[in-house]
Length: 496
Image (tube, rainbow, N blue to C red; front, side, top):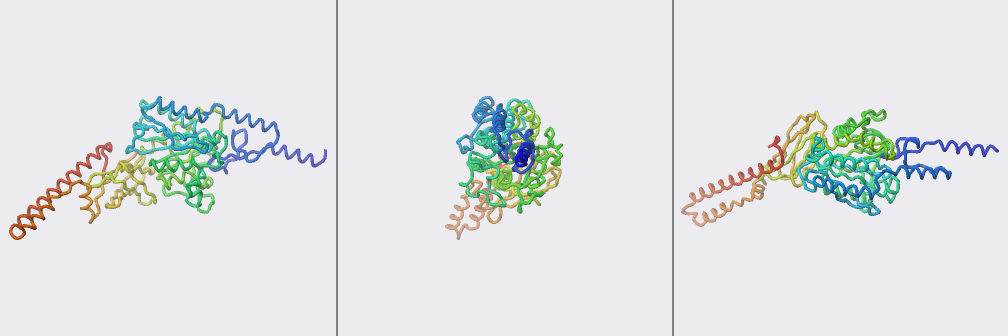
């Protein structure tokens, strides 16, 4: 045997021992051995017939025990049959191959709009990270099985509108690969704040468009997507302006760190991480990505989203799923409940008519605005607890109102009552109170015809009638305001 042959044999032996890279949130982190990662994407193709056959058999074994796309659809339909009193299912669109993107809505009033915060979970963004879809099915079943006896299940159903999309990427799951059927990474397909990424709607994948259209219809307070390949709660910003890796905070860095900590510290062992302090990380400090769903939610949809890495193994054997569920169950439930248990919540009303005003809530020192709902003018502002905040409510055509609060660990309710701006206030009052006050006009006409003989008497009549009309309008507006307050739930402080 010559030296060249020996060299080739040595290279072959070394290559068989090399680890391959695992793609999780961004596909650039964590180099793990093949024995610990399951069905991670290979960065190169190993040669040898026996090895390829073993790899194929491993894929089949790993897929066994997971819900297929048909299984998942049937499971969701069966769920609504069993729990129809607190749930419904609907589709937000279809994948490249036409698979419906099914969503479970869980609420005491499914399908109806309420003055409550809305939360969403999304799983299986990457096709080769299927743990999330399994956990979300288990989450829905746990809530159904334990409502209304369990206090946490009852709180979530009664106080939060929960939406669950188990699989954003059913095609990728079927193909056992990261991207969708067009081989596009869906967590790089959203518009990016720093670099143009598919800025044309027609250039995005159907799964991406479905998410964007979904958030135009429903105003979510917060959300989280479930991934695999690490164990950490990740929060914005995900990218940096210069593409370098460092901690790059968004305006609500404190609130995001708090939400991520809620998940991490409720988890069995996430907060004990030796790689991530407290089990949480700023995305850009871990490694920057662009076109991610997390940043887009916060910037364009007013939705505070986390990216949750819930399993070190991207595709673990199915017999490990019950343990992974037990490790994540409390975290998943507490994160949902946090959108109603923390922060400040309230509604914005018109002082002139008592009607809801879909205005805006701003916090001094935080460059981010939260919009109140269109129907009930309810707002849900997530904030880090144990801090003082100066809160301002605004609405076009009305005077802004500001109040200072001390936010404790529990949520605080504050309603705002805004006065119409001058000089448009009188016109606003007249149009909103449905009181035409036509008596004043007819009195002026009579006064004109009898000006020379009864001017003073008719002028006095007009003034008295106009004053009575204004009192009636304001009384009606007060009644309308009280009626809206009673419909909005328990009494809470109002900034008038």
